[in-house]
Amino acid sequence: MKITERQLRKIIRESLIMERRPPPAVPQGKFRRAWGWIRSRGRAGWSSTRRFFQNLKSELSETRQGIVILTKLARRHRLEPDEMQELKDQMKDVARGLPLLALIALPGGGIATVALVRIAEKVGVEMLPSSFRAPTERVTYRAWRDR
Image 1 (cartoon, rainbow, N blue to C red):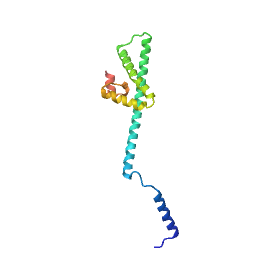
Image 2 (cartoon, rainbow, N blue to C red; image 1 turned 90 degrees about the vertical axis):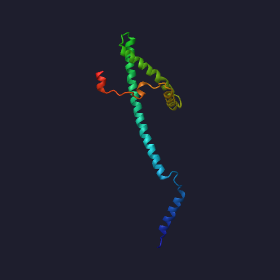
Image 3 (cartoon, rainbow, N blue to C red; image 1 turned 180 degrees about the vertical axis):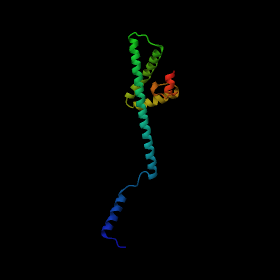
């Protein structure tokens, strides 16, 4: 078999390129597993972020209702017992949320906030507002309507 000059140059060029190219740092199978892990964490992060904003929207709605009740109280209107209880619960939520909001504003506050909430959960102290806590019981629309 005879090799032409052009073929020889191509072989030499490819061998020089292969010599310059470093070996892969991560074997192919491990890279594939790592990429799968990153993608799964990305989906979890996306759903977690979406859940956070839904909870935030719910908490802001509850706070708005609390402000309406507080305005009613400031105008010296008589409050129903359930309105008074709702106002108390909402003020507790605001009192829980403000320190966390202030902590997030500090440098490194995101990590510190998560750590503080986890430690508080282990100790048995509730730091999160009601919208951010896991629901203890799911109420259907019919059960809510019929109560």
